[in-house]
Every structure is written in structure tokens, then in C-alpha cells.
Length: 388
Image (tube, rainbow, N blue to C red):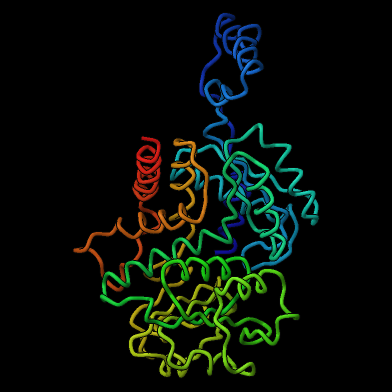
């Protein structure tokens, strides 16, 4: 895989390109599409900036912005090394949603620099996807841009995985007739993705969510040692205070119904799964190696296992969410908020019919290109109903 990947990337010289929609074969065409004809839409937009989406491709364009500080499982590898990933994201926008997306990496680790960069490029794009920015910086950057810009801003690492995980929970409830409000969840990893998963799980109805990270189980008496992301989860009552501040992961998972891992490989042991509630649901999403091997989890008693890998069923992949969501908001003029994220989860879950639903088919295939349109149509229809 390594040599083949390097070879195709070298041959392609990048996975995306910018191509003209029109051919220029005459002076008339040149005059129409460029000078002097291009001055006419420029004059119109100068009079009314709202016309920019009418006369340009801005309304179907997304900027993918990264500082390269948290790339995949590779960590802080810098903007240049992040570029292949951002190009890949651009490719997915094009393939699944017919959206033009431009990878833009910035050589700065300053929150304010990323914020200023996004604000300065905003006139060129209809939305911004923040990608591979370390926590807790990513939270501050996204929240600031949402407040200060009038275009959709979305940090995929925070919310993409959370949306797809929530869709899986919805379908597991549908399949088993169980209610998550009566279940206990253990969350391993409380950074960007974990914090968003916890919030959406809480919104879905999960009452008890125990958090676990490099500092051990999350408890209020250790509040001062946590970063702002974890502190906010405690302050908002999203994370449940574990009664034993010295509990390890084995103790935290004992009797739990759901395990969600966005942390590190091999953390969840077979005996931990055996000591969970009957038929537990396991989300082992550390990449490239999950918190527990899927077959091992099943043999230990798991009813369901979802991972971030494409070589196992139920891949929890952000591509199931962000292309369709952006297509929907760009075409409808909507903004992305918490209700929108939950709406996307419901749309994704309902894409699988009752007849198709099975424990090894809880989520659609990541290659199913109908998913994006299904999500986009739900968003567009919802916005239309609100405005009427």
C-alpha cells in the first residue's frame, strides 16, 4: 500500500485540478468571458455584493483550511505534509457533491492567524471546512469564525465523526428497540471528535456519559488539570462525574452499554467487553488501528462494532456527512448549527430502510454516492418549510 500510494500521488501531481467550464476559441468568446465583458458582472456585484453567488462560482465553492497540527493519526506534521490530505478532501467534495473545494494550508500555529486568514478569504468562497487543527485550538477557531462570518463554517474533525456516530446510534436503537436514555456510555478520548460526540449523544438522550483520556477518568475534582474543551464538557453537564477519580478504563467500562473510542489502539481489552452490559455497542474508531480488533470484540460479546476502517463493516467515515451537508447548506443558504447536525444524523440513518437494517449494515457504504444527495435534499426541504 505504501509504495503504491506514493507512486500514484507522484504520477498525478495532485488529486485535483482547476478546469474551465467553457472553451475559448474566438475573440468573441474571449471578450464575453473575460475583457471587456467580464466587467458587467463586476459592476453588478460592486453595486450589490449579494449578487456574487449569482454571477460567479462562489456559491458552490468551499475552502478547506488546515494548519497541519493534527493530521490523521500523524500529529503535528506541518502544512506541507497536510496538503495531500486536504487534496483528498477536495476530491471527495467533487466526487460526492459536485462542489468545488480548494485545499489551503497555512504556515502558522496561531489561532488568530488562522481566523484572520479565513476571514480574509471569505469573499471567495461559500463555506469553510476546517480540517486537521489540533484541540483545543480548533474549538476556539471554529466558534470565533461562526460568530464573525456569514457563511457556513464547519470543523470536520469535531463534528463529522459525531454526526456519523449519532446516525449509527439512531439505527442501533431502531434495530434493537433499545433507548439510549437508559444506557451508559464510556467515551475514550475527549478531544475534538470526542467532545462533539459527547454533546450529540447528550442531545440524543444519553444521560450518563463517563469520559476517559490521558489523565484517566474525568472527575470534577481534577477540573484544574483539564484543557478548556474538557472543562466545558463538565461545566455544561455533558460528561457525568465518575464517582471514583482513580478508576481505570476497565472500571469505567464495567456495566456500560456503549463504548466510543476516538483515542489510541488496543486500549479496550476483551475482558473489558465481557464485563460490559449484555450485547454492548462498540465504536472503536482510532485510526489506523482501533481500540480493539473487531473480530475480538464480537467474540467477547459485542452486539455491534464500528470502526474507522474500510475493511470492516460499519465504517464510521466523515465522508458520509460533510459532502451532503455542505451541498444542502450551499444550495439553501442555511447555516450549520446543532439542530442541523442532528438533522443530518437522522437523514443518514433513515437512508437505510427497515428491511435493509442489520447489525453489520448500520451505516451506508462510504462509496454510495446517493447518500450526499439524500442529506442535501432533507436540508433543502427543511429550510424551504421553515421559510414558508
